[in-house]
Amino acid sequence: MASISHITSFLALSLLLLQVFSADAQLSPNFYAATCPNLQSIVRSAMAKAVKKEPRMAASILRLFFHDCFVNGCDGSILLDDTPTFTGEKNAFPNQNSARGFEVIDAIKSSVEASCKATVSCADILALASRDGVVKLGGPKWTVALGRRDATTASQSAANSDLPGPSSSLSTLISKFAGKGLNARDMTALSGAHTIGQTQCQFFRSRIYNDNNINPSFATLRQGNCPQTSGGDSNLAPLDVQSPNKFGAEYYQNLLGSRGLLHSDQELFNNGTQDALVRQYSQNRNLFFSDFAAAMAKMGAITPLTGSNGEIRLNCRKINS
Image (tube, rainbow, N blue to C red):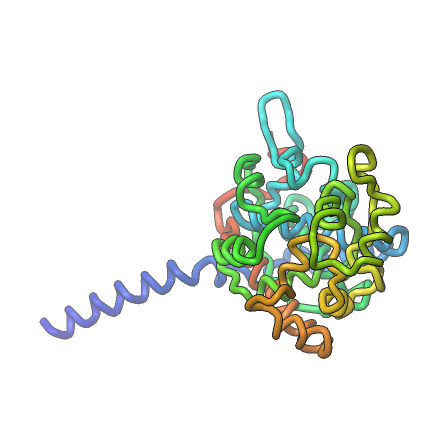
């Protein structure tokens, strides 16, 4: 009887572990090896072309992936357009008039469909494109696990509540990332994505006019195209004043000099718990690259839809009819 009891306990434990690890286990770098062998080269060449045309696009696609994963997991929901009967995430405050790069994902999806029809999810295309854009600007490479499926739903309210904003405090950043299974080190490494790309005046206006922990000449520089009272909301400035089109550790060097553009950037180096790590990253690009790559892989595994959940969208902007 004892042996049967042991077997039952073992099976129960095995089932529990299987449930815990099933999402990760169902994602695999080789998921499309047989069904779409050219997938990675198709995405890589399309991103090379897009980034050559506009270097900023690497950052835009990376931001799309981050905003996708933080809202009900990496399920391609951010790509869905609003319709009279469907409310997507594109008009949530963090995305409205700032999320961009959708046409690049559309173009990649078309090329992938031509090679492997109804096989590869938009969620996986976005995950690969994010990695390839970073690599194209000199950043680290990481293995992208694949097998995500596309959501048939979206949540504008979750996009409004779950995404950390540009005025977030350090404690808010840490708690929002923790809510997605990412620790403070992951958060500080992923914030380094701001070594590339641009942001709008509306997101840094308060920082350059009201914050005290900002380099005065840097504040003056940024005030030049971001008026204090009104107008110019969509005027752009580089998140990394040194090298906005090169993925490196300069972002952290900027923080040491009080030249973080967003309030949430400078929160990482403001006599808080992340100061020591910011110093390390500023002096050791390889450490930053390795932590960033690991955190991106971890973020890419946030509650994916796998197996028979979700669908393989034929058009990334709308659910299959």
